[in-house]
Image 1 (tube, rainbow, N blue to C red):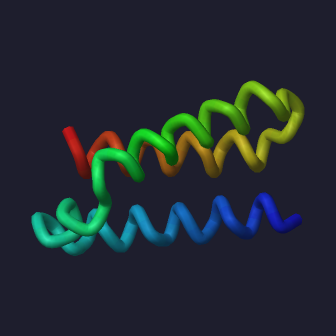
Image 2: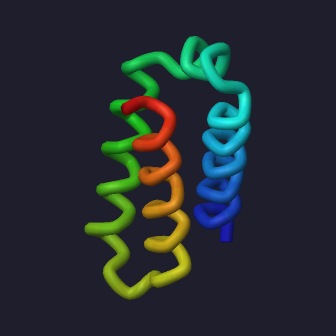
Length: 69
């Protein structure tokens, strides 16, 4: 349950950063982005049957893609 809550909080963070525009990009460093991507991919690989977890991870990764591409 803690894992899901932490993923939800990450999702809220990146959605908020997306709404901030340019100022939001400065908040999230490249190192933090790399660590979040590694963590999300690790979660998807480690827990193959957690569909809710996967959907949250995919949402976070797609929000990051929209923000930082």
